[in-house]
Image 1 (tube, rainbow, N blue to C red):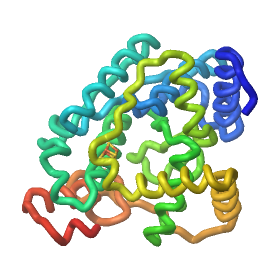
Image 2: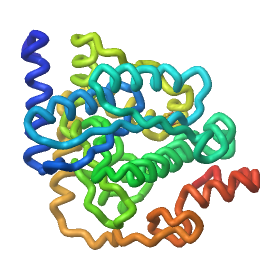
Image 3: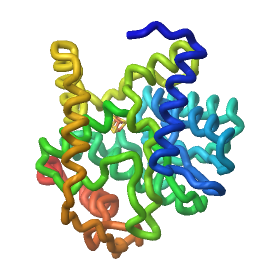
Length: 291
Ligand code: SF4
């Protein structure tokens, strides 16, 4: 790899992000963009990159953090989110599972095969509701190139081809209550995100979630990193195949209904969050573990 000094590296990483935003028209003038800010390196870079992009385009930023309630882990992330939002003069709206749903992830995770199942469902739900209430036109997430490749393989592994419609740097508006997502780091490798945080001495949350080892994502991440070490180029090849596949027309039906219980957008009659809350309230075990 070519040696870069700090300024060159920052220009390299921000230029690529700026180009992606411009090429895909991820942000339009006058929009309010809500950054999903966990305090990890990816979401923190997303916040800094969009603040930097405000030099090129007139739009507004707000950040949203969601405390899932993971004892001994999440608070450091929240602290990093608070510090970075404050340093960049961006409003941070803080939400939590406990305040919104009446339980923490620690309270309910054991009902599931992986804590990531309820974690992802309730976090997405809270983020969407909050962004919608704030009047944000898009939610910017910190998904990087490695995340995207992992998600692609996870969908393959699960036979969940409907998720293919969720790939790419932006998701279309498919329901007025579903705030569309953009991924400004979509083509930024995870390694470079880490390098950016280190060489700029950015306050980020580096700890690993205590539940992450149980997830399919962690296993696929390890597989991809090992494969890349042994056969450099594997990740790029997977991404290339994936992009070619997405050029084929598909007939995935992405129309949404409104949840009969809470009114949030859903592809079923009842949204995933309400379905899980119902199961949690029944203290149901076993059969939901295989969802
Ligand atoms: Fe949630 Fe899983 Fe991420 Fe931990 S690793 S924060 S449980 S999604």
